[in-house]
Length: 428
Image (cartoon, rainbow, N blue to C red):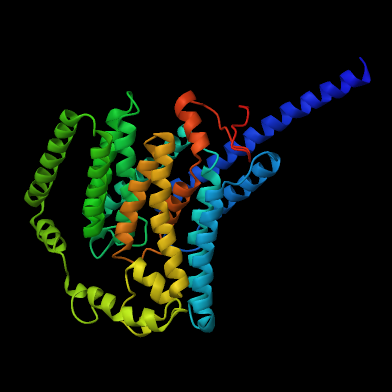
C-alpha cells in the first residue's frame, strides 16, 4: 500500500470516528437535558440538582460545537442571550447597594441559575429537528404526569409536603408555580394526540390527569390560562375542520360542567373552597396595599427610579412582593430590566410567528401557546424564579427553521445541525 493510500485510509477512519464522537456527544447532551426536564417537578430548594443537570447539558453543547467547526450559534440564540443578559445586568446593578443584606446575594444567585436555563434551552434546541422537539414534549408530559399524581395524592391526603394551604403543589414551591408548570403539558398532549395512533389513550389520559392537577392547585389564573391556551390551540389546529372542532368543544364543555358537579357531591367542603377561589378578587387582592392596589402604588416609583430598587427591597415597603412580572421588572430592576422583559415577551411572539410562516409546522405555535400560558400566570404571581418559564423562552428563540423545515419534509431521524451558511450538515 502506498503512503498516499495509507494517508487517505487514515483520514477516512478519522472522519468516521469524529462523526461517531459527534453523535455520541449530541445524544448524551440530549439525554442529560431530558433528565433535567424530568427533574423539574422538584424545586423545593435552590440551587438544586436540576440546575446542575442543565449546566452539564450546556457544557456538552459547547463540546459538541467544538467538535463541529462548521456549526455556528444561531443569531436568535445570541439575541436571546443578550436580552437575558441585559435583564441580569439590570438586577445586578439595582441590587448592588444591598448585597450585604441578608438573603440578597442568595436571591441573585438563585435568579441567575433560573434565567440561565433560557440561554441553555436556546443553545440545546438550535440543533433539534421535529423528532427531537416531539421527544422533549413526551418527556415534559411524563414529568408533569408525575407532578400531577403527587399533587392529587397530596391534596386528598392533605399531606403538608405536597400541599400548601390545602392546595396541591407536589414537590414544587407553591401551587401557582405548580399550576403554571403543568400548562404546557396539556397543550403538548393536544399536539401529540394528532401525531400518534398507538398512544392516543395515553396522551388523552395524561391530559385529563394534568388538568386535574391544575384543578386541585386551586390556582385561578393557571386554570384560566390552561383552558384559554388549550382552546386557542384547538381552534388553530382544527381551523379547516369545523365539524371536528365543534365535537371537541362539546366534549370539553360537557367535561367542564360534569367535573365540578361530581367533585361537589364527593366533597362539599372542596366545592365551597373551589367556588371561593373562583372569585376574581380575594381579600388579599383588595385594599390600598392589596395585590391590585400595589400595582398602582409602584407606578410612581418606576418613574422616579430608573435604576430600580433591587431584589427583596419592596418587602420593606409592602407586606408582599409585587406579584406581577411586568411591573416587577421595571420597579425592581429599573428601566433596563423592564425594557429587556418587554423585548423577551413580545419578541417571543414575533419569533414564533415568523418561525411558523417559514416552516408551516405547528411546533412554533405549540411552544408559543405554552409560553403565553406561563406568562399569564406570572402576570399575577412572582414568576421570576420559574425555571420552566425561562426554558420555554429558550426553546422559542432556539428553534432553528432550517432543522425544523428539513425535519418536516424529510422526516429525519437523526440530528442535522446547521452550518454558518444556513445549509444542512450531512447526516451522520
